[in-house]
Amino acid sequence: MPKIAPAKWTRKHLLGIEELSAEEIKTLLDAADELFPFCTGRQAAPRVLEARTVLNLFCEDSTSTRTSFTLAAERLGARVLQFHAATSSLNKRESLADTVRNIDAMGVDAIVIRHQERGAPQRVAESVTCSVLNAGDDAHEHPTQALLDLLALRRRLGRLEGLTLALVGDVRHSRVARSTLFAHAKLGNRVIIVGPEIFIKDLGVNVETTTDFDSVLPECDAVMMLRVQFERHESLAFDMDAYIRGYQLTPARLGRARPGALVLHPGPVNRGIEMTDEVADGPQSVILFQATCGVAVRMAALGLCIGALDRERARDGPTAGKGKRR
Ligand code: CP
Image 1: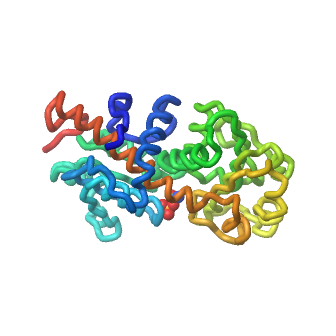
Image 2: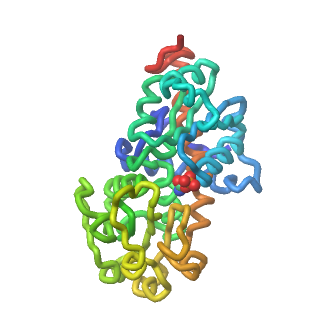
């Protein structure tokens, strides 16, 4: 059985990268590395979550994150329940707090939540006794996405220090961008935010920005392209042709980056907008490898957080935690 360093991990929740130390990030990545051989399911994983139940509570659309958490939990032996917001009692005006307290009282070990409101995972964590993992809240944080991107970078580049990364596109609406910025700041890497003014102006974070993609490419070890989040734009004046001219990653543009520079995208990809097919499917793209790394990272995150929950329950009893069972 892989040692997933449980003693070095004390958090029963994973709510954001902002709250983690560099040491905790590395502990989680090391655990993910240990679990990597098992993440595709071709080799049976240690069933460290046997008899555990994980609830996927997604109130926003998802393909990759929901599937990845499901596979991660199941490969470690857990039972996974899928909560479907569209057919739930949230539609009968049950509050999110009452919903999760009811489910917690039925006996689940972890709730994986994606929600349209910033801070919803934190509020859920304050209401329940089980572990809570943030699968994306508004434009706030998407911690497991940032961690899986780090794992992909570390496994492909062989290091996670001294890197320069361009983070390109719709940064304003991106929870991935925020979590990525927090992570690389803690690890001491340089992140350059790239995009048109409408996406990079007044972000409220102290970071290097430029509107000139071509000028920064020669300094980049990796380029992370972000999805243009049309569904969050409302009245934003977005000029598609100008965006493609200035920011689409093409083979010619990628040729300006450092030799062997990696191309990442958290998905889902708008092909023909953020990048061309040649780049998305080309030799420098690690987009599919990111998906593979995602299962390993989520196995580690569930294993570590539920491990910390177990230690809390052993110490304080089964109803330990801030939440109250009724
Ligand atoms: N990367 C990501 O969060 O994708 P999904 O929206 O498909 O989960």
